[in-house]
Length: 115
Image 1: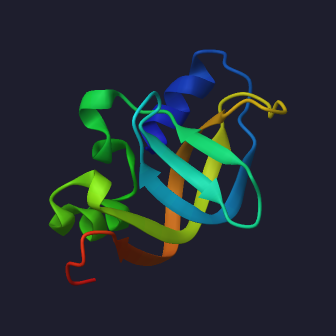
Image 2: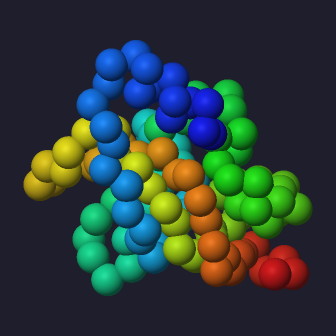
């Protein structure tokens, strides 16, 4: 994750604005497939990731918690996510972000399986 941030900086990209949001990370149809709903708002953040590497771009603690579900669509994860914006926010447009850190995580299964 640090390497990708460094590569963007060295490539002459503008600095990214980072912040921590409390939200629900979930998988969805469409692009981007991984999204975060920011609790208390109508805002959805889209996680920039290669579709083949969805979980590889997320922090290790998120991957570890989500892996036993077997299917990304079977659960969501509530927590505090440190996100860095790829572009400024625009009303009515899903903002693209990368997730650099996650904490206080809780798995919420939809299929009735163990937490």
